[in-house]
Image 1 (cartoon, rainbow, N blue to C red):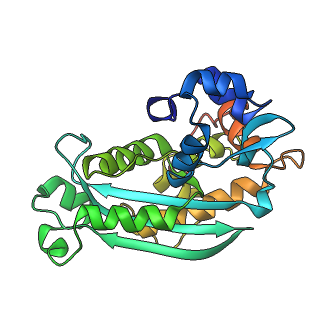
Image 2: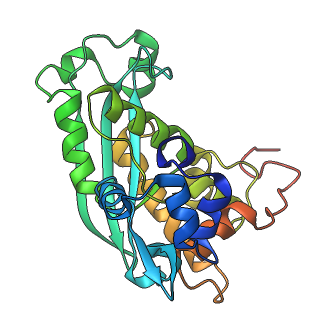
Length: 262
């Protein structure tokens, strides 16, 4: 997700998360003004540090217990960024397993079709007194800071928010990200991995209202905590978790749905 806005090739991005990137390669791709680029990237949620002569994502050496994770969910009035927008956003900050801060807001919107209202329960009337998209995204970006961005099927939420930021004249996201769905596939045996299914089968959030942002965030938080408890003790830092969530073998799914009656 970084390659479009980060101006580094995928090989270099991988090195930043693993064995490090040398100064020469970094300057070849971004030019001579390294300090400016590092400050700009940090403002976009990504911290790069120098360690024994090479450059790394700070998360390469960050113990899981010291990391700040931000679990995010959005509701939108459609899936196409060109003509649709965020209508609700929620997030919680998590450190050492505990929720430390919360953010949520509806977003002023002039059009929500009946199908979306049926799914989310959100109407145009509900959003009439809500702040506009730019204000909400500005507040959210400040809230997110440089935390690791977590969502269930993270690509959609991350990309939609990042492109929405650009639509309102703000810089795109560069935060490191982690997919709770991908992590669950490698830590929890389940017939399906949709958030609503996992909530029902694992009893994660008994008062959940599916497709409302904060409710889905709290469900994802419980799922993330369960997955983290099941990680091997050899996984100690943030980049280890990200790598595991992408590359580890998925668990074998049951042949039959245990939630369906015979």
